[in-house]
Image (cartoon, rainbow, N blue to C red; front, side):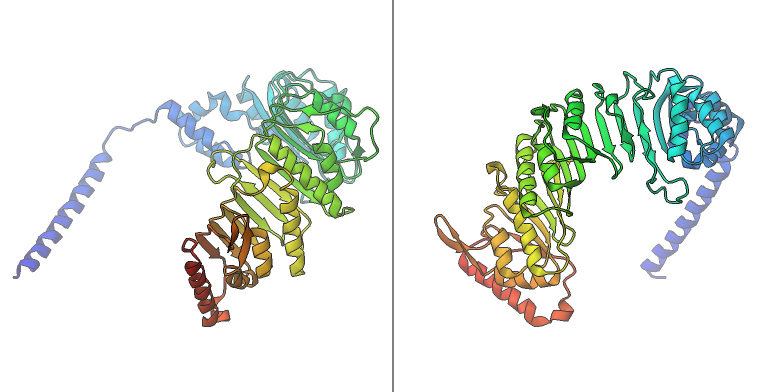
Amino acid sequence: MSLSDAQRSIDEQIAQYEQRILELKTRRNTYAHISRLPQELLLSIFEELTVPIHVKWWHRITHVCRLWHWIAIGAPTLWTLPPTHLENYTLLMLDRSRTAPLMVALDKRTSELTTAAIFDHLRRIQVLQIRQSTEQLTRTQEILLASTEVPALDLLGLEVVDMDSPYDRPSSETFTLSSTSFCRSSTLRRLDLTYVAIDWNIFPLPNLTFLSLRMPSSMTTSLEQILTALTGMSSLESLFLELEFNMVEDTATPGIVCLHCLRTLGLPVFDASQLRRLLSHLYLPLLTSFGADINPEAANIDDYMGALTQISSTVYEGDFPTLDFLSLSACSGEFTLSSRHDRSENHTVTIQLPSARSERNNHYNIIRQFMTGMTSIARNKFECLTHICVEADLRSKNLVQLFGSLPNLIALLIMPDSTVLAMNKALKATINYPGGTTIAFPRLLSLGWCGFRWEEYGRNKLLDLCGSLTHRHNAGPPALE
């Protein structure tokens, strides 16, 4: 027997012994005393499983043994998310939750009896979210009118949905939140109203930190009402508005409203002129996240440019870090400015412009409009941009005009194929600097493209790219990766 064969034989014996030892250890464990998980650990496990949509599933877990069942029943915090479409379960959980704060979600499936039973515990409801039809919400509001105040309420969310729609589409019937039935609570911090008409007398709510108003398209308001409401809510940290207001000049429109705690502002589906006018009345010194979707209907280039200029001013006055990354898609019309060095917070500026889906020249125009509008304030001249991701159908001269002069641009990711091909020529272009003529993209270190089909365009295009890179190398700028 050779030495290697001897070692192999011994290795096999060792493996057999190790397997036998493992079997003996397993057998020995079957005779050990049953260990009990600490009660605190079991409670933590149960709390991770208390998801309302899986209520029956996690209730089964609590019936694994008598000890687990006893621990679960003795913990009121496990029973604070009642599945309101299941009446018996809800009544059971209301009883077992004792005096613990409740988080309640009512929907179209919630019966009036269940709603009444829940509102018997109104004083300990901490979160109340209602997604019901206009008729149901009207009855729910009547119950609230007869109820006592809600001293523990932190979040109130209301959404009007179509009773007959399986997908919870918005209802065509209007529901108005009455100021007489509104749950006025000193603890209320978050208010979320979707497709709900507003009795503006419910405002101001000085303790609110989060406000989302998404009004029905059939309802309009005035800028004066909006600003008057915001004037009394200086604690707001997050604000989302989707509404329409008339453009008639208000005789008593407040001046500048300062929301000195606001960090997040979202304005989806706003008319460009309305967006500009609203922002011109707001001063947001701590703003670090902004999003707007400019409605393409009934707007012109002057409206777009005016809105972008005002957005630029709002960003300038805010507390944004250096916004050095730009991601843009001319196809979808979405532009996002963000910070690559501050990932811990959501420091972004996202703007949705009307998209240009067909003509190549439209892609260039929409990007040029964005960059021109956002450069109206000196601080935002894009000189700090280091990374750009662009999805647009652009010619080589367009690439040079838009990005070739950016002094700190070091990385560029482009798509689709037509723009990748145009980049070959753009890499060899020259631009005029105050100190003379230099090659475009003077500090570019990294160039990338997504989904480019080399097999379709052939070897010559790769050779063209190599030629462009050689030209840049001879011109003196840093070598590209």
